[in-house]
Length: 225
Image (tube, rainbow, N blue to C red; front, side, top):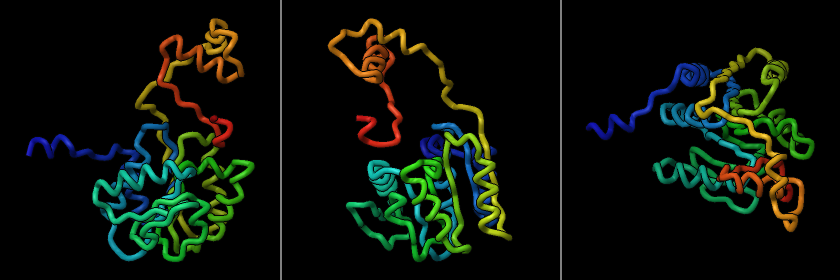
């Protein structure tokens, strides 16, 4: 009993507000820092929702789709996956997918776009925008991100597209893990000359200063490599 109580996690106020808006049928935009618990909102809502219809949870990469599919499968959820090279249980009540693999879902009652900042990407943004435009008015939207400077503009865009529907925007600014800034250029000065490349030298310098592990954010795979 004590162990079960320890595992119980209740939503914070801003998460509970987003869950209530979803339950009321609103489209919901959630803007919160990485690690704050955006996905937790969806997980809580999915577990309490009732009724027919499929839920699509889209992510920007196949790796993320595989991760979420594995995580929710371990929890025993009725989940499938569709990506550019994989389709498994595509008719499941919940499907994790790359957005391009689920641009025109037939039965979706809720369509989730994780990392919706891709709307502004010069290469993939047209897919994201076109998907939102193609969704029927009966499909509810949940947009999640931690790196959009103007979420209000996205809300206004959705309101123009879907007249008569409500769009609730939830913003959480507090970071659960604080950030410290360092001058990374100075670290590159002590890196051996054999290590070349602007980003490579700075990453190597950070590792020499014991600042690892390091996450490199790049919009496309070849840039990260």
